[in-house]
Length: 87
Image (tube, rainbow, N blue to C red):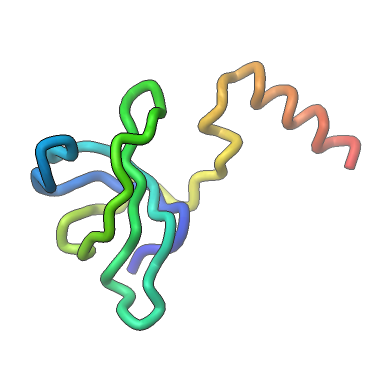
């Protein structure tokens, strides 16, 4: 069962842009059907390729609950952590 913000990888070619091995993040798990999820796929530059609704048979979990800040550059990560320390 997937959770929001899980890191995933496509198990199959989903369309012409999303090929087997493409990585993404679970944005939403539909409550009426835990095996249907909304996924954002991105490229190596972290640019969005597509947002798709998929069955969990098409994807596998790569990691748990990525925190959005870690998608930013190292300098932005450091700045975020500096700000967070003072709040």
